[in-house]
Length: 97
Image (cartoon, rainbow, N blue to C red):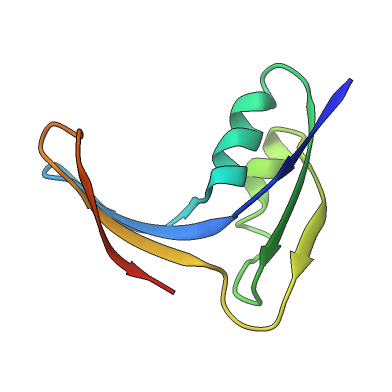
């Protein structure tokens, strides 16, 4: 059996009280696909932009996730920037693009 995951694949910028990270691969489909890949074969469907490189696909390849369903569209990949509270119970969206 395999699993089809449909959703967002994005780049994130994340701030916590302890660390900041820029251009981290994120999005619900990416997180779900990687987690599910520990249990079954996964096919991911989503849209990414011109800025999504072969290096960005590495995590999918390492987890043997089928990326044939990733549609490449002109423009940038969805972007989310957020800041988490000290205890991680709250987050604030700083930007989306």
